[in-house]
Image (cartoon, rainbow, N blue to C red; front, side):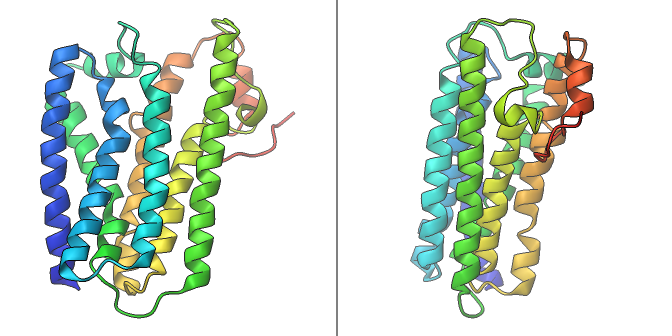
Length: 263
């Protein structure tokens, strides 16, 4: 299986380099690093499709891979559709403004390499599942993992909808603390991370073996770290600090995992 996985992993690495080259060209053309966000979902989707098709060629891709791929198609499509509606503004995303203003910042080292690496790492469960299993599938865990991923999709979608409705009210300067946002300061990011924990569970149950299942933990861990400490929550909270009501909101609301609000 190791050799098969190396073949699949190499194909995904080539795809990542090709897509990030296109991303760099689009960023240069539009002058907005936020292009990376819009193309983030398609990049991971293309990696996953590459893994599935390469596995199909070498005889490893099974039914579980196609289930995982279906979830990723829905996730990537929803995310890109949601983000592209915000891309029409001429202004750069403030998170990327903060990131690129660092003295050592560059498009290659601060955006393309980190984001490309994470995209490749996130697709590892699909890679190992597509490379072929070492044993039998555990259907119950595959179903559970798929259910977790779907739950993450629902949470992410509802959170984004609630935030869009809040913004549509034109309440500039206020803190969004309704619905899911009263339980977590970043429920959309939590939902997104849940998608990848569910996909990892499905991959681990597809008969890849214990070692492959443990190693592919890098996927949900990398995604969660990126969402919390990378280009997600950490940068967003830095920008929100000082906004009216923000300190009280952080006092009573969980940072990431949804929990009942504190009184």
